[in-house]
Length: 372
Ligand SMILES: Cc1cc2nc3c(=O)[nH]c(=O)nc-3n(C[C@H](O)[C@H](O)[C@H](O)COP(=O)(O)OP(=O)(O)OC[C@H]3O[C@@H](n4cnc5c(N)ncnc54)[C@H](O)[C@@H]3O)c2cc1C
Image 1 (tube, helix red, strand yellow):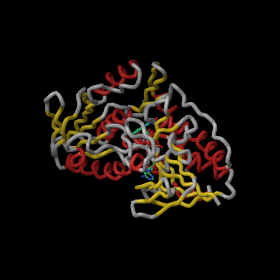
Image 2 (cartoon, helix red, strand yellow):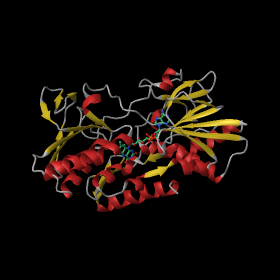
Image 3 (tube, helix red, strand yellow):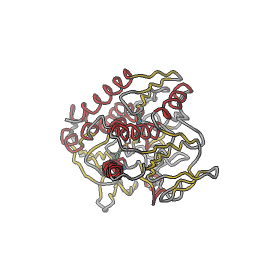
Image 4 (cartoon, helix red, strand yellow):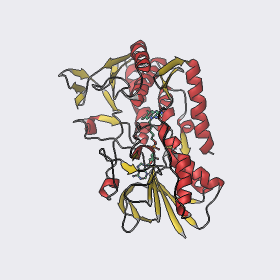
């Protein structure tokens, strides 16, 4: 009996599990290990903050999905890999032996990237920590406003799509709940949405101030309890600082001896196989395809699901996995607070309530496919 270990409930693995549920494997024992019993669909998270969704609408429960796939579900973090013995260890040192391992554990946040971040900021990763923190924070700010206190200042750090959507969602939620607050977005020196086209950047630069989000194009150099110090020497007040500073690589794959790229992400070939250990597959934000670098983005993690499932099955059956090339251009649908969004595709952009409805349909359909 061969053993397949799926590490992480990431977007590619929900597809793999669904494929296994449709066509069960014979003679393969499948285990899923992931620290939370649900996978958050991050594309809907800003909509939850903005008040458009309940959290249950934005998550895929993992245990029932694993059960349908005839997989054992272990709720834990992988903390260490012994590649020679082919054993993964959880943080509680539970050994999880495997013949083939597939890793879709996503990114982590580097809490040491900015002095004071670890102590004074709410980190966006793991996303579950933000999901815990936000309702408490919102209730506190609402209570302070009720008590007639001054408006609080909330700062989001990070000018990528996640940071932009989050800042606009927070501003919208505060306005609709009539909780006075100042919201600011520290984009970093590269500015707003540096990997997207000029059109979408211009749209956000126009919309953000109109929606009550102050834009600051500078790097955060240090975070203290009530301030953010900027690289150019300024200091801005901040009662609550939320870090959305982008994807970093977990250390355990590199420490295990897996080949990684220059930023520490697992280096895979076009078959989604580790270039150093062919019995290791990886997809999504934790992986980096040699020769085809792509932005860390849910779109690519989702698209890697079908080729990953196919290649795991072929490898387990002793066949050569197939090549897969991620698409060069991806569609981004960026929500802007109210039920309005901006679409970005290869330098083109458009916006409106219709874009939100389009995004809402895509997002709901993705979750509904796996959340049963
Ligand atoms: C607010 C926000 C909005 C975003 N919106 C969009 C968007 O609209 N479109 C888009 O394309 N991208 C978006 N992104 C980016 C997107 O979230 C990521 O690119 C995407 O989540 C990567 O998917 P993944 O499956 O690789 O990892 P993840 O979604 O992070 O999934 C990783 C899984 O592995 C589990 N895990 C983590 N560590 C371990 C471990 N050590 N052992 C076992 N399991 C582990 C996690 O709990 C999780 O279940 C957004 C990000 C944020 C923060």
